Length: 84
Image 1 (cartoon, rainbow, N blue to C red):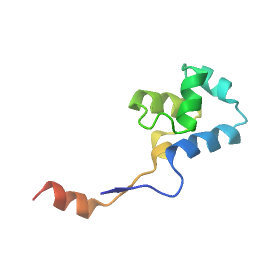
Image 2 (cartoon, rainbow, N blue to C red):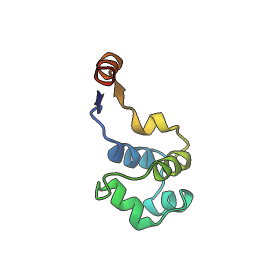
Image 3 (tube, rainbow, N blue to C red):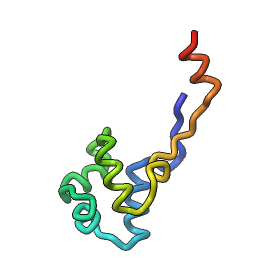
Image 4 (tube, helix red, strand yellow):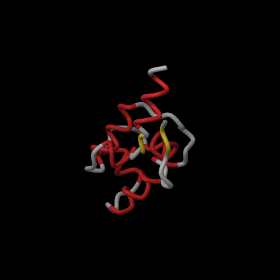
């Protein structure tokens, strides 16, 4: 079973971008994506960005994927669900 921590990926991207003093336009350029796409991701208008997009954003923010996603994983529940 997957659970989110309090901060979601969209707000985490925005927070990390601001901590690095990057504008949305600068981050979009670094991630080789459009400004519009990045703003839609930060505003949660794109709810399921692809793995490739998340990877490019993480790389542009100089963080690993775990930093952006930070899902908590419940090993025991998932194991039971998948092995019934």
